Length: 239
Image 1: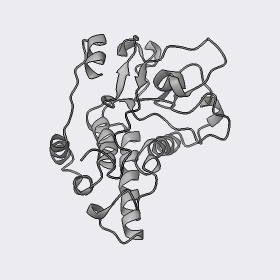
Image 2: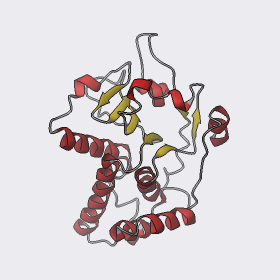
Image 3: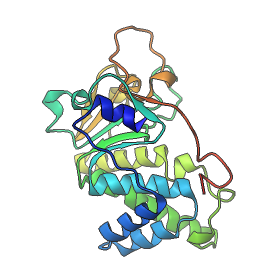
Image 4: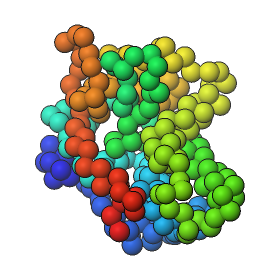
């Protein structure tokens, strides 16, 4: 699927980090934040490390994170962001749950595909939120980080995954803008919406298969997520 994206976007390059390379990357690039390095290396559950690593990479390097089970559709990556917003958007996200879910749904951004410019404040807030969540959980449950298991953890989606990411981005935005984000203005959208420096794409962009539209007037899907779900086991991923 990576080859598929590169064939359609030949000016881009990709890099896959193994567990060993991921550990080395964090040690070398976050030495100025030893608590990040120590916590990341101590995490025993693969999905927690994978979630944490995507935010660390996007903060440090910028670019595009795609999970391994994501394929690109026909729109070139260079055309994902409207030209008039390229200089204004520092983070680009797409709704996972938005259209057709009703008003009671807890909306969250897809994290299988995220775009960012380096050193985004929003990514740093997400990183610090995860650190804080890990510290609080281990203290409350009197357990060391290396002894964490999926059996005692709360929902991964909420702990380090899409809900954590979404909450962190909104918290950072509201702090920056000094006002609450109007959820109605960014719900059930058919066009990209810029909030501060975060560009929110409609659900059809990154998650077409799980959003329902009662109109044919939508843009194209940009990626397809194939839901391999390799982390959904008792180990929290492949070990």
